Length: 91
Image (cartoon, rainbow, N blue to C red; front, side, top):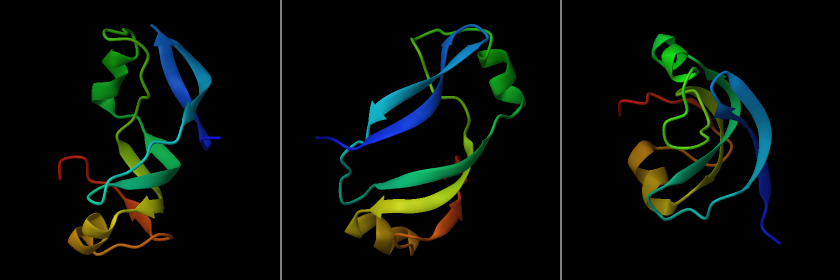
């Protein structure tokens, strides 16, 4: 059975639901972040009033703990599982 996660998901303009998703498999150049906190910035505010391409998880100012990391990503970013990180979305 696949592992599951919960995420606050924008499902319609101004409406958010807690939904369950399967944890994705990651490649050697990727990672999986266990979220502790996610900020919603000014650019997200307008997006909260519309759902253009179906439900989505809002927020891109993220802090959490590396839950899984592929070998290439670990080397590239100098991280390991268990590290607490803040994500810079423009990198």
